[in-house]
Length: 248
Image (tube, rainbow, N blue to C red; front, side, top):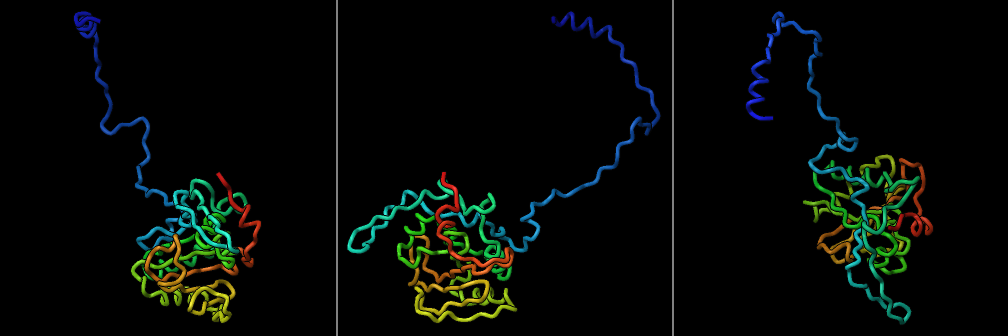
């Protein structure tokens, strides 16, 4: 369309004014009210500046780029290879969903909220390959890391005060008294603590060092014995450890 034709068309357009009373409306809109964005369920109970600990913090720390761990067993040299990590397998599966024992999550969040300091999980779930790569000893074959019922951790800012953290864990169970585990089949110099629900070990700076624990601090191993959410005793089951997660 040429400018001349457009000018001629516009010249013949008549615009009539709209007549109405001041404030007159055909449809009265509802008054708008400000609303807050809804919060996700895991945000409802946040009482610290840190994110709540969820099952996502328990992903296996395996890495296929790690060189093989070479050990001697029964006079033979054995090579243990690490897994591919989070890209190669899931967390333990229960009822069709990824799963970590809920009492374990509650306890770690309790520590975080009690001290207002961040819990650093150095070892959460371990698939069988990573579990063997970390520690090929016979004792470790039945580790509850493999079924999502154990965590190793320390508290940032309280690295040299693990006994305070252990006391905090024990105070979570005011009606369930603790005892000391006095048998000699442990890999720590400090007698572990246990009650009906949990088992606690304290690793000193020279104990329990492996690829998951390459820091210089003492750390705590927390193991679930009875989950109060599920009302069930937690035992290592070989089939659960071997077949209880998805491979990709």
